[in-house]
Length: 261
Image 1 (tube, rainbow, N blue to C red):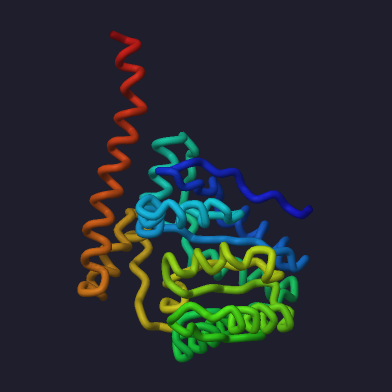
Image 2 (cartoon, one colour):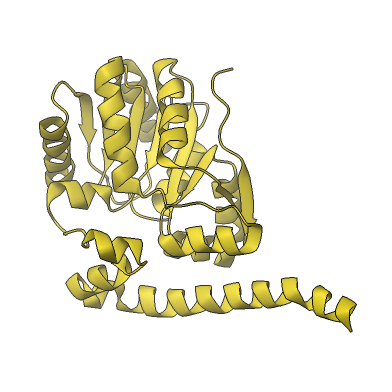
């Protein structure tokens, strides 16, 4: 059966894993070495609110074994709503680093699926440079459209024949979550939807300083770099997230006030 995935707690209808880097990486590597299908997503505020808007996407994300709290606000929501006392988030890029380091030690092969050919190839080179001995057995760029049934079958066959135990999926949220959910049981590997990690490792975008990441301000750093593309996403989505969290907290306190009265 392998290592059990971490427990989950519900945030706005989305089951988010109560986990840390060590636990998540251990479950991923355990599945990867056995070529056991495993669906993983690193979910930040944007992905969480997409699930709120789209119930079908929410069901797909809830089918994944691990949904890490990628952004600090998601971690804060877990702690405030469920008292989980998580001390850190589990971001996609940092989880990839942990998993790749262990993949070298365990001889696990890695496959990259998504993004442009240039970005995916640069991402692979960076990971191999940072983790000498990492076996990257395939780099497949995105078609930027949904595959036909025949193309999809070819993709699955190619990945499985590569011997990859880990598939890093960088198709952007929510397309990558949908792909991972749809391929559970077909791709014999741990599949990680890690979004912007491809761009970070390729050098297309810079990560925020650690103090901004810890303070939950990484989104402002990304907004500064890509204001046109991310402006509406962050400003509208973040406000909706905060409003929803405030409402959830108020509803949880309401029965206590009534009992006191």
